[in-house]
Image (cartoon, rainbow, N blue to C red; front, side):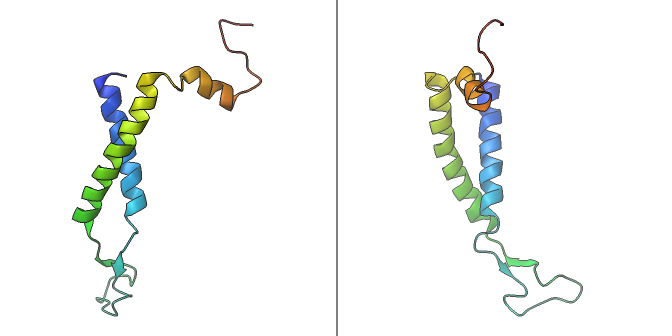
Length: 95
């Protein structure tokens, strides 16, 4: 895995983790009974984005290390994944 591949993998893991973390502990205007006229009651009042970005980075680094380690060690290869997804297909140079 090259440097660019590693960065792309990290970016994908980071954004997926961030999107999972976004709805956690959100307090909406409707929850706090403080709906500003012209806004939706589900609009966030307290979203804690800094904390979520830091936690997301921490979790993404750990996940990236595990996934990159698996990829670099060759423990699971592209051929293995292809066999899992298409068990009837033959692997190799042709058939």
